[in-house]
Image (cartoon, rainbow, N blue to C red; front, side):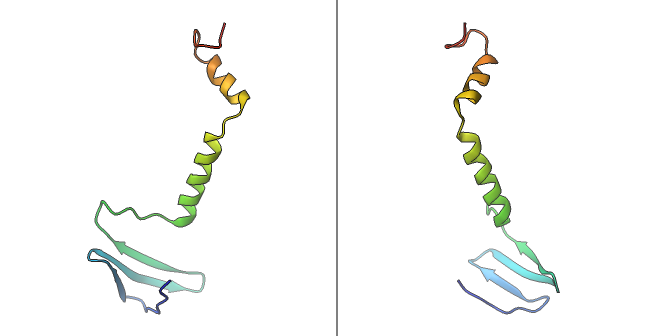
Length: 80
């Protein structure tokens, strides 16, 4: 991990086309501005992790959930 000190208004360039600018520094955090092409995905790590955990939980369907879904489709295999 690269650790840098930057002041408000200073920038950091990542690759050829991503620029991170320090917008504001406060006692409770730092505000950053990120200029990147549209095809470059920029996510907050905690949000990305929460979505991944929710996807794992949703994919781990138990028998009760499977039966509930089958009940929604009359005539589907396994329903009478």
